[in-house]
Image 1: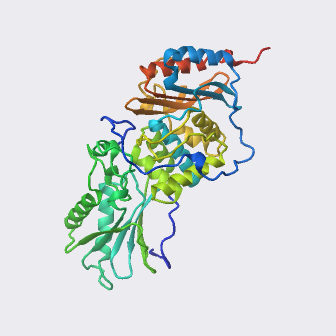
Image 2: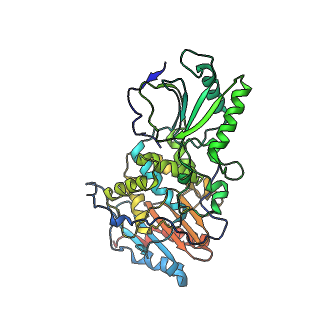
Image 3: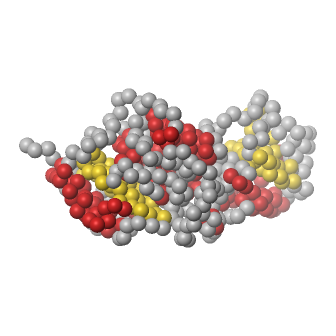
Length: 430
């Protein structure tokens, strides 16, 4: 049954494989300046949450970590905490660094908190009072040909004019302007690859095939036109309209194509490090596809969690922008906060697993870390980060390691994590 709206559409409550790394040298970009989170208005943190302590309380582990980092300690930030908030080890933990795809830990935590575990993105077909149809979307990363086939069939059955159920189809595609398709700091070379595909509301196969789709609305017009013709449509008219154009009063909702549920979206962003999905989650959670507005909303939420925000800068949702800055102490504190969250199990289930799943499936296989570390990887040229939870015999350890310029970072990360597994180092004296 069609649903009629009586006023402009309200703010949305909602949220081809991209990897969090760059294959090309990254030249400096002239992007819009972004204020650090510490420059935003202060919001009181939630009461009753376990907070990360400020002083290292396990000298033995601290010494082991420093010994493992050796002469490269200056390019590393490492923080380890337990479930009670004890800071077990911390090396350069408050030094801001480029986090690469560890940025997705922020976007997915914020999206899960704001949107909930049952949230689905929606692609909607509307009939306007003048007989035109309009297709609106929220960036479903799995939107593909089968969904277009259903939409085309419904469009043909709905006609294109008042009192003309079988008339010509006049279909509007509501989309963001081209200048908003990429975060401004994304390198031009990255934008050509699948992992740097444009972020749009109506994205067929996440705007990627083998490479990025340069003109998503043009591709969608061609695919829809072809499908409408294949199904017997004639005299179809397809046009792109601004996504911000309000739906006229008395518009009718004809059909909704829901995305996969939130747990799939979270897993795609974290386990598979899918840049497109992470960017969409940030925008939907922030209630705006205006990137500065959505990241400022995320920053306000982070401030409410009592996290150490000094030097933290949010620029995008995926970590492909090198303007992002996180500290390892901030990330460890965020992980501790999410362990206390009502939806904690959904958050951890979205992570890669050492030796088993996602971007960690080929790392530390057959070692003591195999199947015990759940986390998020991050890779850009010169950047390597891994953060997550390590299950030990005496409870979880929340760990964040970020390197900017380290040699053999995977080996170092494995060595640090194995030191963290030696829980006897941090037992209080009998």
